[in-house]
Image (cartoon, rainbow over all chains, first blue to last red):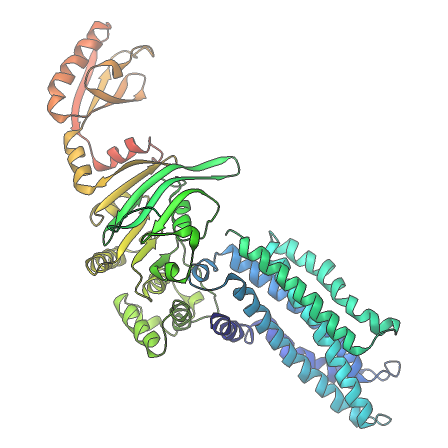
Amino acid sequence: MSLWLLFKDELNGFYRSKIMLALWVGLPAMALLLYFLVDDIEGMPITVFTGLLVSSIGGLLTSVLIVVNILNEKEKKVYDLFLIRPIRRENLLLAKFGAVFLCVTVASFIAIVLAAVLDSANEGYNVQDILTSMKDSLIIALSIMAINCSAGVLIGVFSPSVLIGVLLVLFGSNQLSSLVLLPMITGWGEMWMIGLASVGISGSLLFGAAMVFRRKEF
Amino acid sequence: MVGNSGEMVSVRGIYKRYKDLPVLLNLSFDIPKGSIFGYIGPNGSGKTTTIRIMTGLIRDFQGEVSIGGRSIRNWNAELSSTIGYLPQQTSLQEWRTVDQSLNTFGRLSGLQGSEVGNRIKEVTEELGITEYRNRKVNKLSGGTLQKVGMAQAMMHRPKLMVLDEPVAGLDPESRVLFKNLFRKLSREGTTIFFSSHILSDIEDIADTIGILGQGRMRYIGSMEELRERVGRSTEVRLETVEPVPNDFLLERVQGVSKVERVADNRFHMIIEEHKEMDAVVDRTINAVLAEGLHIRGIHPNRQSLESLYLSYTDGEGKA
């Protein structure tokens, strides 16, 4: 009950935030820019390239968003009024993760679908190819962003300051999230493995964050 | 289990330290149900730490605290719905409006359906913030935000309200509003525990007062007892012509309970029993003259509530 309520609340706050607005508009705009400004991206469909860009830029921005948000709320003791109420502490984090991840999922979906539409306007791509690259791009983008979001939650919980938090995001969560691309780069894995690895890594990071947050004294 | 059925809060032997800094040292007190307990002490004396322990926000401490007969070591939904908490500074998520904030806190505290809306209407009217209901919390003044903080603490009609410096920073009108609200809630059976570092904030509404100084409870009792004590005790101001040697101890004069050396030749002495004042003044004069010193002036004054408070806190609260 409290998780659903907190999730709806966080969603209400995040989808209108400035960073999220930048993602809502920025990610689809990137697909458009690629189409109109870049003649040739080494034969790669715009859908795939957009997927990589979305996961990289979107992932970084969302993890920074979560870290800064959690650290600010910790600093201002916003959690006090939640923690004295009958809720599970970790629900505060899960709600935040869920809200941000849902927002970036929708933004990524819009951007990648738009890129697929643009690809379909190009000669040389058939519908099957486009659908496959759209599916693969979405899996990659969402996998990377799930890891970035959950790493952002963990870093936000234990980081002592915004500066350290942002540095950890830049040098930690961004590198960690790129790990899931290994199966694709090395060619020894399937796309579903990326999704599975992402679920495993994200789940572990969120579990770690919940454990720390449960014991934390504010 | 600690405490008895007549007590809403029972605090027993609390020790708390932050690293090497002891903050609370063997703190014990009880708060009867339905009473208003004023918790006063200088800045940094441990008031907020006590409050954060009582509300379960600090879990690492020694001692025992029970609320409504339940130990806070076993924090659960029932216990948390017993408490309404107003922190020293109300911090809410900035993107929310007042209504959204109260709605969330009301629902999280167990209110359901139309009860939430009705209760928001009631508390915002009671606190005079109806016109701000649709305003974002980051657009509110400090005083209005404090009222929103009070509103969220009252939303679920808690049996105990724990308020950390609730009237600090409020204008005189709002202070009166808050104090009247405390009286009303107390009449309705709510127990109120509130802290302040200003005695005048507490003296006209608290049934019981606890004075905290250097991590210890220096005085606990009713305001009547404290006022009686003020009436009994007297301050005598002594000024000599010559500087008084350090080895001349005015504390040795029979009837003098405390001496503050203000300057080399000026002293404030506290006499516990007002009736003994004349005899103590005589004995002081004799002692000073016997030391070969000359008296420029000696003036008895009734001790103020404020100076009594300072004597309990060893002057920690002095500006």
